[in-house]
Amino acid sequence: MNTYSRQSVAFVRGEGCHVFDEQGRRYLDALAGIAVNTLGHGHPVLTRALSDQVGRLMHVSNLYRVTQQEQLSDRLAALSGMDEVFFCNSGCEANEAAIKLARMYGHQQGIDTPVIVVMEKAFHGRTLATLSATGNRKVQAGFEPLVSGFVRVPYDDLPAIEAVASHNPNVVAVLFEPIQGEGGINIAHMDYMQALRRICDAKGWLFMVDEVQCGIARTGVWFAHQRAGIKPDVMTLAKGLGSGVPIGACLTAGKAAGVFKPGNHGSTFGGNPLACVAALTTLAVIENDGLMARASTVGMAIRSGIGAALAGVDGVVDIRGDGLMIGIELDRPCGELVGKALEAGLLISVTNDSVVRLLPPLVFSDDDVKQLIAILAPLIRQFLGS
Image (cartoon, rainbow, N blue to C red; front, side):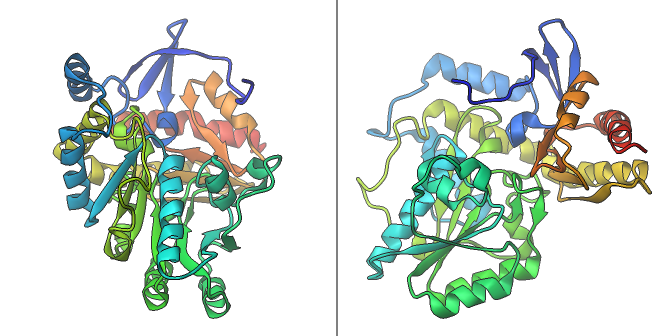
């Protein structure tokens, strides 16, 4: 179906942080498949692990125990402090599970019409429920009627949350992203996240954190909310968890643990042996190679380097980010920069119309940083007429 405005290039091979097209031309990948290719392309450890698993067992279904799934559950629980994990195939499925869980939790509390607080500029997926939770009218248009049961507030706005808490007795949960990726690399303040945790505790709400894009060490910690010293009741993961192999997860703790019982939710492919080996290997390489700390160092180098190269340039509104999740906001729509960067041998994206988004693999090198700045800064300068 004609559902994508694709660039007219096909990649046939990847190596580290570079990909190659059909003509053999080389491109620096500063997008990582939209925060997916955590270990870049063709990582030898991941390649060996997947090849070995493909030769042994790929799928058996959740009618039986899956030992790799049990190992991954334990690993994620150890890293996050969470208690339970449900495995699926994508971020929207993980968020769909969280939404269903919140509704069931509400019904168990005697609330007939449970409501979830969501944020402006949020992006949680494209199923009907996650689309309804998303704060973007462009992606919602044409799919009405949307799913009810959501109330929307401005992002990083504590008084708005307090106002909802004071007058809506049907609220059962808050769902938010510590860093809004699709919304333009918007970063929640630490005190805001801490206050949200306190409000949820006081009101008996579930505190649900969407870490689909910002999780898995991308911001220099395993999960972005951990910088605030808090633990959610529900956390969703996907994208970078499997380094390119589709896998999603919905984790629960505290009052959210035990809400789902057998038969309440399921997934045919979720948590199969191949996907779980991809995730286990990804986590192991991140830890063994020190990639979490590297994400902070490299991200800072990119932001400072781009900032120096664009210093004094009219039209640059802000350069922001955390680790390897970076946004360069301009004062005008800049979607054409995606094609211009591609022509120059660089993969980027533009989100929220005017924000150049960079999501490099966690294996990005110092030379990759220099190449990125050398290509991107002149393109932005030229685009802004500077």
